[in-house]
Length: 128
Image: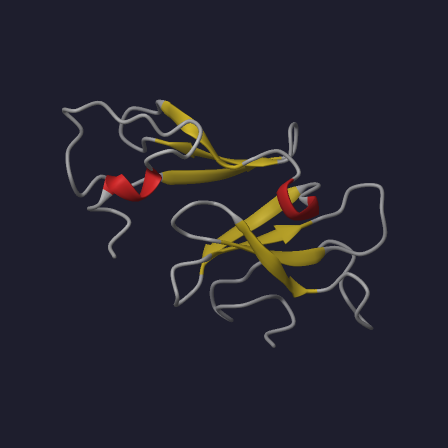
């Protein structure tokens, strides 16, 4: 399913009430917001706020920094874990924003303090 063309995947997701006149094929801009520990979605052309794709602290989100959609269209978020131990990488459904699990645990040996998602690795800084 193409997230850009089929907006019905957002039906029932808080913050995703698209007007009837929305154009199919619209792109979205995703921003990690550390002020309320969410991932927000915006219209990249108008800047209009469309809603919170990942709700506050879902899956323990505490300092979202890097965002990347993986080959399966799921969202990977580098979680800084502000004022805690090491960071981790969290995985969310690319269709609903629902928490799917921890991809890289903060408890693993040599986990970086503030992990980042690097597009050249297509995973994390450790390029697992």
